[in-house]
Length: 576
Image 1 (cartoon, rainbow, N blue to C red):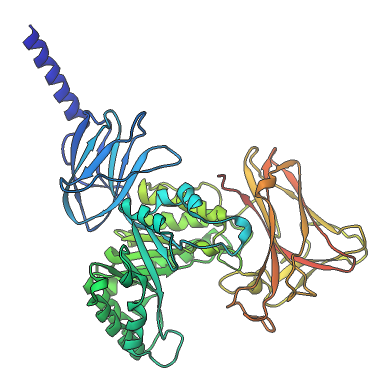
Image 2: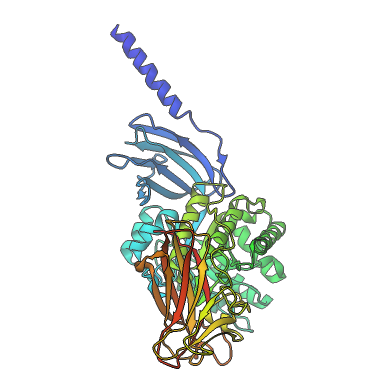
């Protein structure tokens, strides 16, 4: 009787094990960049082995459900060391990302009984740069504590251009993740080609060669240049690969459309044959409407199709570098009537689902210095949604055009605004050629050369007001505005304005005003890198209490002081 009971128990255990894991399955494509390699709804035993096959040399994501007790122990292939987990701060689940060669592998998991297991092939997900500081210091430090909370769980590669804390460097490597070292491209800005010796000497002194631990060198940037330039770079690149300190490491070429000139195309073929990688810069501007934005993305698709035509298979060695340049002094967020977060989502969605991008090796956003803190956090949500979870549905369901405010740049004078001048003629709409370029919009555009002008009259402020429409009660929104003193544009100072939202609750901790100089490359006579113009970025955040509210903007300062402001953007705010 006991023997029969034991046999029945063993049969039940075997059936349960087979129900939870039926051996290696065919890889299941989730989207262009993510493939499910193994999944177990409920691990059946205290120790279980799962076989999977990596379809290419590249990154693997391993996720285990949140455990009530100690973290499970996991080893890939018998000779490997135990995975070092990074706990997802949102779910509490242990996760790992490691780079594995193409082919069959086995994952052994201990202490995870009853937990779900996911093994996926994912893209190389790069963060650029660490360490760094935002140009708008009011966003706060993008330090390691910030990275651990908002960035590190969703990336596997960090690009650096400066010294990294040794403990942080080692911690990232222990997890199986990767550091890349940045270098510039000698001779790029000169008409005369550099010598191969000079190029090689510069690259050979980089930390990627002189210090252990780096996975590769990322060079900025291969764009239009002469045959002589590319001949010198190619020779130095070849010598770099023969350098002992660079053995086993990869060369990443930050680049434009290298297929459009014979010299750059020939060099691209060398890189591809060697197995090196491309980091293709695609900094897409905001369009005036959704159709315009889609056409911009379509141009990106067609250019990538040209890459694949000229270099078949290049997608397997391509990191697509999008831009979250979303804050001054250089920002792709140039249309205050459009939701920049929606546009970022549209770009990620295209990478994940458009046939042109099928099989792309990696994804990057450039760069944290120019990203506002909100957009940086938001981009990590997109990395998670499309590049780790493998979703094909849009993450952001909001409309592209913001419905809350009209005439945000005063292009139509003071239409839709109710003016309350403190004195006769103390409020007007004016313009200045190059104003938007100086305040940081990129690429150069005439949009934003118009603004609301005020002249302070004694103690009483000037005010303009407009009702805000189609708000969702309970949701957070931000109000941004960029202000300057048009009579003293080259004076380093903060141009103060007051932003009020009647009928809503202001969240004080997210508000700030911060003065910044124009970008070194955004020149409008007489303003230049050595003689910049000065602007002030203002942000207020409010929680809607109803479907409408009223926005009021007023000037501050001494009598006679002038204030110009525009880029009055009201859009949903990404909560922490």
